[in-house]
Image: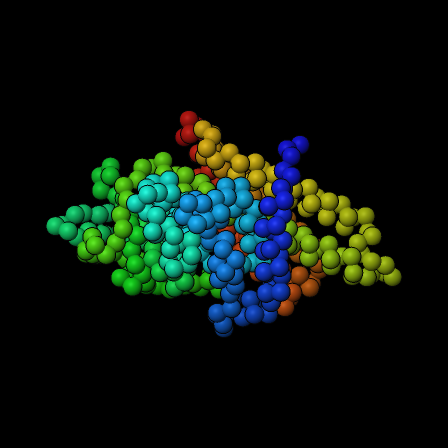
Length: 362
């Protein structure tokens, strides 16, 4: 058994997140948000006030200098409380990425991202998965961009957007202020988040208005892997919340004159859920501790497959254990399940990750 003991500093982080979020989960308001009746959200502003936007920022830039494993622990709590906001985009596509590409020349931008003076949303993961990059050309001191970005989340909550541009074999990351972009085809996700499209029809923008970096396909793959692993951590937090609600329910619900939690058949089902959640959590945490290993991409794909094949199944099992109340509007179990299904739909399906695991078979 892998030892995943959490140190005292990590316990303090998790306790502070419990204190920050425990009284904010209002399923009635979250349901209204899902039906596009309000803009109820929490999470991003709260962690900004606590300074956690700088958790991955180098200490010399005023950050905490924590590692990626710490961030995955953070994301478990983020999911547990159904928080909302561009946290993965800002910290992985933004801060963590920029520190690896060009830490010195990006220092001011990193500091702004760490203090929420700038907020970034990103299309890097979606573009890496689909291989649909924005074509770019140079004309004098301008960039000319052509192509489309679909399903871009948190555009309205951010100040800038990162996209991937490609010209023959040359790859660039462009950070473009959102006030220079016109979103189209706004849609509402299953839990009420807005996603948009960005269409670039020979879009001309002066170089001085955007930030660009030369990158490699390996850097894009690493951003994709880290973002995917953070989503898996979020999903395990969601699953833990579902399990805790299930245990609470069967411990209090009575039938035939006794608590239904005493029925052996239900205990067996809960044991299955408990074991599966903890197996998946251990795999996620182990992978998050080995981000610099040669086999990291394959380990991420193994983790993604495990999450996708286990966690939504456990959610539906929990619905069954709740009976009819699990499907009611106020109870909120469906929102947690929907978020797990959203995460399952992102970052590639079973076929995509099977090809990463066994490239020689394709």
